[in-house]
Every structure is written in C-alpha cells, then in structure tokens.
Length: 95
Image 1 (cartoon, rainbow, N blue to C red):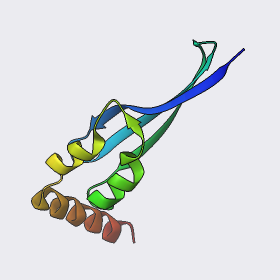
Image 2 (cartoon, rainbow, N blue to C red):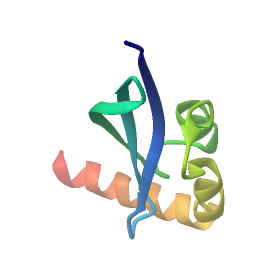
Image 3 (tube, one colour):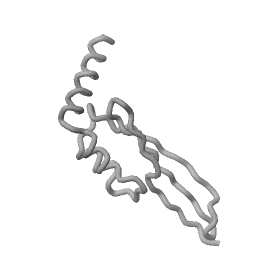
C-alpha cells in the first residue's frame, strides 16, 4: 500500500473589488486512487496584500491557476489605490 499526497491551487475567483479568492486542494491517494480531498481557502486583497505577498503565498505551490499572473494583471496602481481608499472609509465608519 502506497500513500501519496498532492497539494495544489485549483481555483481562483476574482471579485469586483479586485480581491482574489484562492482555493488550495490537498488530495491523498492510496495506490493511485483518491481516498481523501480537503480544501484551504484564502483571500488576497489588493488593499492589504502586495504582489510580493501574493508571490510568497502562491508561487511556491503547484498551481493549475497562475495566481501571481492574475494579480499582476488585475492589481493596477489605480485598482490598489481605489481598494485602499475603500478600506480606509470602512475603517473610519466602524469607529
């Protein structure tokens, strides 16, 4: 009996505010047959995360979706500034 596992990013969803929701799958196999699958999710936010943060969180993982390339394409200076302004407004409103 051989147990192996594989972890990879299998899904990325882009929200209107520029956030990227990332799903990482961990699959466990016994003799090549899948016996278990679990998921870990994270949200990458252009108002809180930098492209360096995205690379640190995603680049070293096997990926069926290139999250770094998606963030680089979407997170323009304007989009980042817009999201940061929105977060600052929300923070002031909750105080």
